[in-house]
Image (cartoon, rainbow, N blue to C red; front, side, top):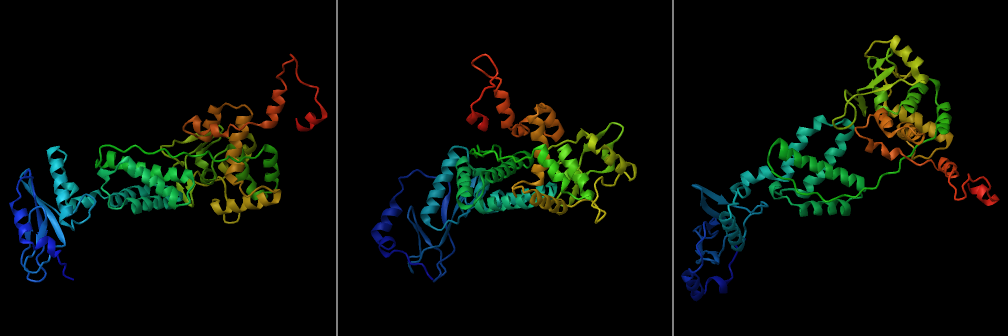
Length: 429
């Protein structure tokens, strides 16, 4: 369909003469040019300064424009703005030329932000793809799916935005998008933001595309409730477990390592002479990885609990160094994640525990919580769990209310331990 110009605007001889004679404005670098020819006669469009282009014979106007300028000895033709949008009106071309001249005067003009072939390299979506390719093989298998999803969400939101133009406002809008359009917990939103922050650090530190990273808005998170079991409940649970599966569950309840680390434990990791075990590997889903979970983590060496020593001694003494310490008696291989889950689900139902209590809660969380509440120093518990700092361990410092009630009896405004209580108080306290 041929686009027809407004007849009153572009064919009035007096208006045309007026605009052709109007030369009072300051001359700028660059020229606005029409792309293409009249679709009827194939002749070039004629420019009416500060107004537009037209084929006077057929009253047609161009559908595309570009800015043509010389900069530092090079000819530069700009066909789109910084967002990659084509210049489809003369007014948009004029606004863009004005902005380019402003940048030239302020020494901030960068042609690569306008030339499409160069601009594509800076699209956030394209750089995220490059980032994902460089990162994916280093991720734990259990985390790959989430990491890929977080990256796709960012690609969809930022799209063809030039990463060099990214500002804090864009990050605020991204946060609002995540909170408004997805049913994410605040912890998931924080994880997605941490993922994007890692991406920007990659651009700054690894491939040096950006010099600075915008300030990220704070994502407030609530500390999830930590479930844990008392020693009495753990004893009831262990009694329900089949004899052949008791060793690995007992080991978890006594040593506090992660289920994936217990599954990955090999005879070579045990030093019977020193009475220690070195946790240096884990299973991520069903993939054996020769490193513990976490960023920049180190191996951790812990003592063997006395109740497990004879079992571990038997396994180490009768097997090669590369053999797994805990073996599924049915398959003759290491325990799978699914097998441990089934064992725990059955125990949980049998002793009437809530479905919210995971094996992780009944083992690692419970070991840490019991030790802290029995007065073991946070630093020692942190060392056992292999935490990089004690801040991670502090969430296990639950207050044992029953013990606290007992301890508070030592407080008195009468100078003596409280022993006389009313019947009602005895029922409560």
